[in-house]
Length: 442
Image (cartoon, rainbow, N blue to C red; front, side, top):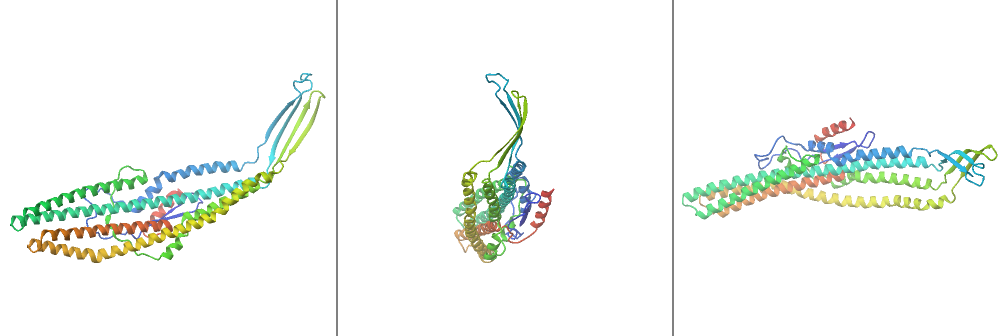
C-alpha cells in the first residue's frame, strides 16, 4: 500500500509505501472476529489517512516552517542605517561656548556576497526541513502499519481462542456421553471441564489484548477509544518473497538517504557563508558638524575597514569544511546499515512466507484430519482421551503458528516497504494517495 505525502506547496512529494499485497482479503481458517468486536471495519488506508491528518509530530513542521519564514525575512535585510549624534566640548572650561554637535548617518557595505550566502543557507534549511518531514512521515506510516498488523494478529488470536473454547466444549459433551454410558471414568470429565475453563480464560485474555492493540492504533490519530474493527482474514496473504537486489535498488531512494543530499546542500551553503565572512565589510559614516566656537558648519565623512578579517574567519571555514566532508562518510555508513536491515527483513519474510504456505497446505489440513479421526475413534471407544486432547492441541498449536508466521511476514514486509519507500504490491491505496495529496494542497 502506497501513500504520497506532499510536504508543502512546491515541496518534494514523499511516497510513503506500506505493505499492500500482504493485506489482501483472504479466507481465514477460523472466525475473523469475536462477538464483541465493534464496527465499522477500518482499512489500512483509512488508518494511514487519519494519522497523517491528525498526528501532532507532523503538525510541528508547520511551526518550524514559520520559523524558517521569519529567518528568511531577516536574512534578506540589508545592513541597517544608523543615526549618529555626537556632542563634544559641551562642559569644558568655557561652558558650552566651545560645543560641537555632529549629526550623521552610518551603515555597512557587505562585501563577499554575504547577503546572498545567507539566503542560500535559509533555502537549504527549507529543503532539509522538507526531508525531515518525509522521514518523520515514513516513520509514522511504518508505525501505523505495525500497529495495524498487531490488531489483525490479535483479532485472529481472539478468533482462535473462540475456536478453542468450542472444541473444548465439544470435548466436554463427548466425554459426558462416554461417562454416562460407562465407557470412560469421571476423571476424564473433570479434565475436560478444566480444559474448557482454561480455554475460556485464554479467550478473555485475548479479547483484552485485542482491545489494547486497537486503542494503541487509535492513538496514532489522537483518539483514546477504538470504535472500529478489522478483517482478520487479511493476515494470511503475504504475497511473493520478491527479489532482494530489486528491493535494495529501490532502497536507495529512501528519504533517509535522500536527506543526506539535502544536508550536503545545507553544509555547502554554510561553507560559502563562512568563506564570505572572511571578506571585510566596509563601514561608512556621513554627517554635518556644527561648532559654536567658530560659528561654522562642516561636512564630516569616514570609512572603517577591519584588519585581518580572513584570519579571524578561518576557524569557522575549517569547521564548515569538516562538516561538509563528513557527510559522505555518514551516508556510506547509513547505506551499509540499510543493506543489513533490508537483508535481514527480506530473509525473515521469505522464511515466514514459506512457513505460511506449508502450514496452510500441508500441516493444518493433516492435523484437522487427525483431530476428526481421533474424535471419532474416541467416541467409538477405540482411542483414549489423551490421544483426542493431543490431536486437538496439535491443531490449535499449528493454527497459532500460522498466525505468528503470517504476522512475522507482514511485519517484515512493513520494514521492507519502510526501508525501500516503495510498495511491495501496489493496490487500492493509490486512490488514498491521490486523495491525501489533494487534501494537503487544499
